[in-house]
Image 1: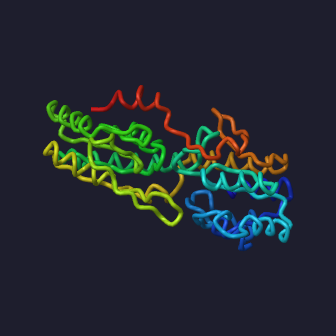
Image 2: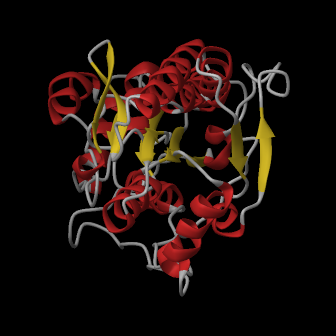
Image 3: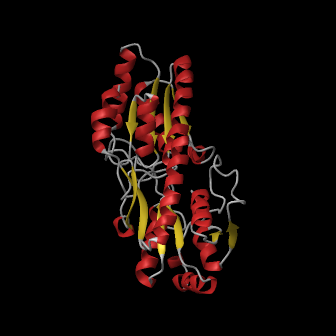
Length: 327
């Protein structure tokens, strides 16, 4: 995505571009690296971010927004492109609204939960990694007649779980949008065993929660930013399944494996399209907007559409497609 911004910005618009290191910390502290066509050669197949990343916001620091404003003034910036998920884009929107800063957003998160766009880049790659893992787990599950509970990322939205679960032939998929009944999960597994299907794959998003009183909920621990630390729901579910059914059950936590590695062809094309559209939006002065995919068209949408919102899984996809294959 950065490669596309730089290539069109430098070669077609004559822009000079820099990258801020470590997200908003770098913007406040004016820590940059030059970005040009020559320095970005070979970046296309690489995942991750060459600029680094940090949690937090200028609004977490006394005088933080003013430090961002000072960076614009002292570096004579014409625009800032903010690449990120709900948190980064909400900060971008607030800075534009509060201080009038010329900002364009680009939606990037593997969770695919940004409102205003049909898809964020990074999601397709995460789904492919999770699907590949599930495909491999079928082999060991079938060899040992085991239930495998696979935990994937998804704090508030179960997009990765739903897509990877459908693609990987999961027995059941558990997502944050709909609290699950562990007894019904166990019933599905028993039904499979009665039909001679002794291997099962349960895919669960890290943010999934049980219905009240159906099983023990996780103990909530918060990080320094007030976010609940997730991870571990698969282990709890695996223990309960084995206890209530007697079926040998194992837990697999994919974790940050989903966030790295070589991006898929789809994500390379989508991020390239987003980058080209983002630098065009700068030259159209579409401040306070982000680039977005609507159908097969890349367009722009107001950042205000995304603030304080999370895009949930399409429940028609979950109920009318995924559930057809449960059990």
